[in-house]
Length: 401
Image (cartoon, rainbow, N blue to C red):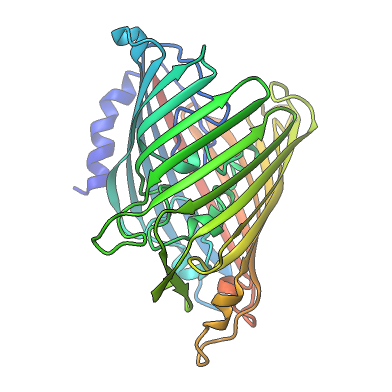
């Protein structure tokens, strides 16, 4: 019996006892903190099992064709410490993550990836484990523990349903180092402070980089990141980040570590705007624009832009129907392009992805999400033909309170 089969077998008795399902649309394993502040818990304890199964393949392109299966199990538990132990304003969260399956990007051959649950190798991990303390009447909070940076930083809800990884966190930050910062699938210890009211927020964090980022068994680097924003029908976010230690430079082909190092830093901004309707009603549409820049030395990308629009309740008879379309362009840095070996295919300035996805709840425990992507100049190769990627995601989500 495989590890994945063992996990699902152990979960079945729990699933049979659950009163009702709640289907999720998140594209990354999620934190209970949320970009709008921690949601009020309906009970002292809650448990959520989220299972995603993807079948993604290349339907057109210059390389091989074929499909790959991969899946993700996310088990999350949250506890209201005030109700459970009298610790006023405190809550705790623990999340375990298991990923398995193949790598569709091995066929697609892109730099940014095509599936946001793809991992380098199958693994079972403690994904998040933190305690959060609220203060100032709930307007402030401090979080300490193992933490996913992208659960609150460089994230926007209207891009959350898109499956291409660049819509989760900008590639110019995600690609810093061989393991990336503290994001899916590997996270590390952090301290995060947040202040907010109804209209504004500011937050900052210090997060230890997962082992393998800018270190070879020596002292670990830390990521310093800060973000401020305006909430509402028009939401605006500005953020910046830097690492405490210099990181190894990145060279082609692909993402190859060079022997020398450089400072790693960057800036980003996000804008979301309501177009039609209200989030609580059918036919609600919201658009987004995101942009980031980086040093272009410790990542292949000098910057990136993502834009798109998402509609919820798009079919009158289907209240949970959702459609989203997005464009993600990552600009290759001049330093990366100049380092391209002369015996390798020439590089161009960018790699771009257009994605169209639709999701809907089709059964009590099941959401289906067909997806299509077109990647222009995969891996930034100047003469590479475009790649068409077709996929289907199945999401099962059970909650108990």
